[in-house]
Length: 371
Image (cartoon, rainbow, N blue to C red; front, side, top):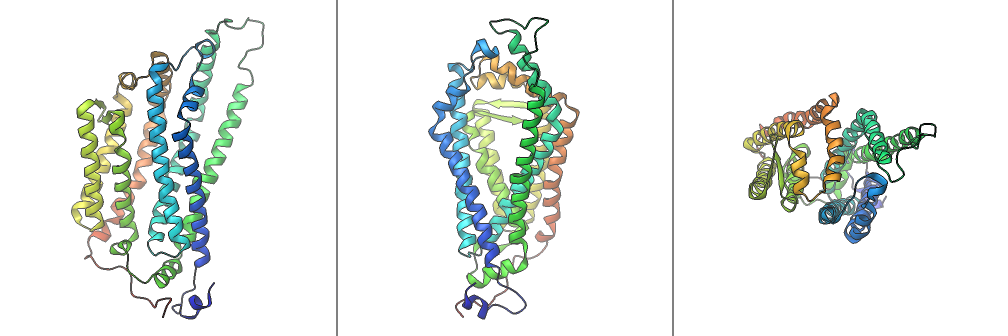
C-alpha cells in the first residue's frame, strides 16, 4: 500500500487496494481462459467438425455434409460470444487493478450473473442427472444393436457394463467443477468487491465521477442485463429462428422479431439507466412475457422442423429429439425454469425503490489521492 494512499485516506475507512488487485487478477484469468476458448472455436472449426463426425457403423448416425455448415456457424457464434465475454472480463480486470471507479459496479454485475448461472446449472445437473444417464445409455445400447457386428450374444458380457459407474464419476466431476468455478469463484469476487471501503478506495483514487455514478449499482445491474440480452440476441439473425409462445418463427418473421427484441431491451437499458419508471415497468413486463414464451416453447414447439431448417440430418435430429423429449417429460423441467426465473424477477421488483427517487449523483465527494 502506498504511503500517499494511507496518508490522505478518509477517516473511518481503510484502503482496500489488495482486494481490488485480487479481484482484477481473478477476472483477468477468467478473461484469458475465455479468450483461449474463443480462439479455439474460431480457429479450429474444421478440426472440431471432423471430430464430431460420427461413423454410422459405430453409432447409427452420421454428421454428414448437411450438418457441416450448421456446426461451423454454431462454433463461429460461440467463438464470437466467448471473445466478447473475454474482452469484458479483461477490461474489468484492468479497471480493478488500476483503481478505476467504474470497475466495481461492472465486476459486481459480472460476478453476480456468473454466480446465478452457475447455481442454476448446478441445480439443473443434479435434477437431470438420472434422466440424462438413462437417455445416454439408451442411445448407446441402440447404437450397439445396429452396429455391423450385430447385438451381443446372450451369454456374452454386455458391452455397456461399467458405463453407468463411469457416467456417475463424470457427473460428480462436473458437479464439483461447477461448484468451484461457477459458485465459489464468483462468490469470492463478490466478497472482494462488496466491502464499503472498496468503493471508498476507488472514489478516493479516481475522483472524477464516471458514468456508473449516475444511478445505484442494482439499477446498473438491470441496465447491464438488458444490454446483455439485446447483444446476445443479435446472432440469432444468422441462425434465422426465434421462439415465441410455443412457435418457432423462421425467415423474415424471425429476423423482425429478433431485431424488435434487441431494440426493446436496449430501450429498457436506457430508460432504466435514467431511472425512468417506464423502464422499470417494461423490464418487469418483458421478463414475464419472455419467461412465459420460454415455458410454452419448451412444451409445444416443433423442434423437429427447427432442426431440419438448421441443416441437421434426420439421424442427428432423432438423437436430439430424444434429449428434448427427456426435458419435456421430466416433471422437474418446468419447475426448474420457473424457479430459475423467479430470483431475477424478484430482484427487478426489489429495485423499484430506486425508481421512486429523483435522479441525483449517488456518490459524495471525497478527498483525492493527489490532495
